[in-house]
Image (cartoon, rainbow, N blue to C red; front, side):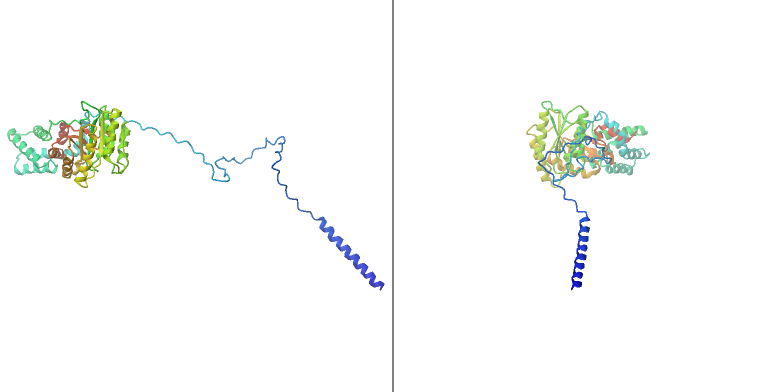
Length: 400
């Protein structure tokens, strides 16, 4: 019995020792740190300690406010002020006096074949019927027209018969005189822009799109500015995309103001506003660029007739210039007939005359319409529109 009691006591002592060992081991382990206290937002901020403001700056570059992603929305974008728009530099156009003489080389380069061909044929020792037929063919190929060709050949035959022997100089003089007679030297070729009783002069420019009509209007503004006139442009070709932009660009280059309307708008309204603006500004000339759609003669007549009527509520038109592409030859005459039936053409502008050897179109179109060629275009340059001078033109045809 005592032995049993002793064994129990020993077991209790051993268990107690083991329990104390375990508890002691647990107490020796470090406890986790307590969670940080939430800042007291009601407490005043702590006073900075000495030296905290003078903290050594970091090496990494500082970000600007534009580079920092701010919470609650997209980053703030600081817009730079727009660059000032510079006014286009005003150009001083080349004087128009003698401009065709300066462009004579360009004209003679394309037209010389006509003059040389005629002089070569006339220089033959025997001018038989075959030779005169060749002369006729040369003139017809150059688009002089049937009736003017017959007149020229008949005049040459009479003069050659009287002259007898023919030196090159005599032949050149003979041909020059007959061609001048055909082209005409008596017609008044000035562009009417200065009515005596009022201001401004009003010029309407008509023609098929593609003939260089809008470009010619812009170049005509340069011609007028070069002659000391002030100009307002009316962009009444509202049906062709960018026509108003093109005309305005031409105007800005010489300081001419452009009146324009919405694309596809009423051309007559734009023309009316242009004349009204020109009167208020006191300018010398208003140039009106019209639409050139040739879909039907009736539609064209209605459109141009309305423009003309509306403009004449201010004042009568001083000029109606028809722009024709010289390279189209006889097709240009067909266009000329249609426009002549629609409006009263007072003058012709022949463009791209340097791009064709058919300079005889000058004679043919004058005969067809009964009005003079007043201006000719001899290139793509801004100052390549020149007043038509018959003597310089004929001299370019026959060469030196």
